[in-house]
Each structure stands twice: as structure tokens, then as C-alpha cells.
Amino acid sequence: MTGTPRRIVVDTDGGVDDLVALTWLLRLPDVEIPAIIATGGARPADVVGAAVTHALRALAPARRPLLLRGAEIDPAARAAVPSGAQLHGEFGLGPLVPAHRAEFDGDLRVDPSLPAHTDYLALGPLTTAESLAATGSDWPAEVRLTAMGGAFSLPGVVRGAEPNFARDPRAARQLFAEPPGRGVRVVPTDVTTRASCPPEAAQRVLAGGDGWPGMRAQLLTRYWSGAAVRYCHDLVAAAVVARPEVVAVEMPATVAVDAYGRSSMTPEGDSAVTVVGRLDDTAWREIALAWAMDTEVRVR
Image (cartoon, rainbow, N blue to C red; front, side, top):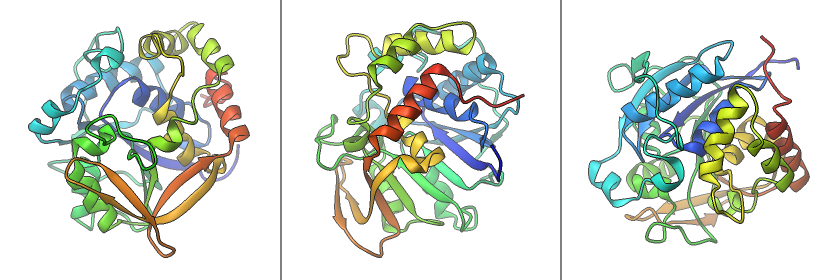
């Protein structure tokens, strides 16, 4: 592929679906990941960083991103919202245990600067993103934030809220009230639950293989265990950023988030916040199958 690569900073609080989405992005030939941010959300930042380090060592990307420590959510919020350990495992690596400690290259709490990027993809709570945006000068005007989170037409699973928003409602509320850079795009669970993994893609993924495909199969076997529908919420959000043609409906809106993280939206034509409403089913299927077959990979 030709042209300028899309440069995506990925902000994660760990977990199987986060890592699966992150590693897919790392293998795309027209995407660069200059930095990965480990935000303390469902699990502490040190644990997130160790899981990301484990995945990076397994994947061995041609160009290793910076791994940066991000902010931590309030400990009370972590205690109040289940971590999903039964799906993600104790360390966010399914049945695996990280073999190394987090290999951080920096700490955004000390130095809030990021390498040049075009997009910021938040797969967990918006704690670090809001902290960076609050400083103003550290959020480039050309960068768009895409957040996987929120539930509008569907009820959330944590007191009516989607977990990412439930873990830091204040950060989400602030970013929607004052969108930084080129604005904020929301990929809610209303969309990600409809865009499940096609059966033939799931079958191929679970078959495993050598190297990363084998590790991916281990992670998703645990994550999808006993599930009638194979969800891949964060892969959908990653596809929206890396393959924007997958979006069929996206609307500008005012998004409100209450103290529990429950979200609501009102269409508003000139809003800098947009909500993805529907994917192109054919495009999503093609993306999911290519991901499963590992056919779009970066040439070393």
C-alpha cells in the first residue's frame, strides 16, 4: 500500500480484546503505532504494561512502539466495577501469565508528551486522554480521539453503564463537553455487539498456529468460552480508525454521561462529537476474515 501511514496512539487498560485489537493494528502495513499507553483501569497500569510487554515480545513487530505509563482511575472505581477476570484472566492475558515486568519507555504523568500521531484510540477508560487534553498544549489540533465505550439504545452491564465509561464517568463527561483536537468519535457497544466475529473467522482464529496466531487462539479460547456470540468490541473500534470505510452511519451528537457512567445522546448537527451508529456489514466481514487469516501484515 502507498500513501502516508495513519499514525495511531493506542490507549489500553489491558484485557484480551484490547490486546487482540492492538496486535492487529501493529500488523497492518499502512498503520504505524508510535506509542501504546497503559492506563490503569480494569487493572493497574503496571499489570497492563506487563501484558502489553508480553504481547509485544510474542509479536516482535518490525518497529516497536513506545510503551508509556498513563494515569490511574480512582481505586474506588476499580473496586466498584468488575474487572472481567473470568474472561480476561488475572493479568488480562487470558490463561497466560506475563513473563516480564512492564518495559515502560516513559511516564505521561511526568512528561505528558507523545510522538507525532494522527489518531488517538482509547480502548479503556478515558482517564489518560482527559488528563492530556486538560493541559491543552499536549493535544495536537489535528488529532482525533476515538473512544470505544458507552451504551445508548442497549443497557450497560454495570448499573446500566458500559464498563469503560463506568470506570471514569468524569473523564468521559469532560471530553464530550470540551472535545479536543479534531473532536471525539464514540464507538458504542450498540455497534460493537452487532458486529460480532463471523463464525468462519472465529473458527480460523481458534485453530491457532505458530507464533502469534497460537497465542491469539489461547487468549480468545478463554474470552469466548461458552459464548453463543463471539464479540470483539475493541477490534471493531480499531477498524473504525484504521479502516474508516467500515462505517456506514456516523452522526454528530451531544453526549451526556451521568455519575454512574450511563450515557445518552442527542443529535446535533454542528457538534464536534460524533457517534458511530452502524457498520457496513460487508466491509466488516471482510476485515474480520482478513484479521482471522492474518493476511494483512506489515512487511519487514
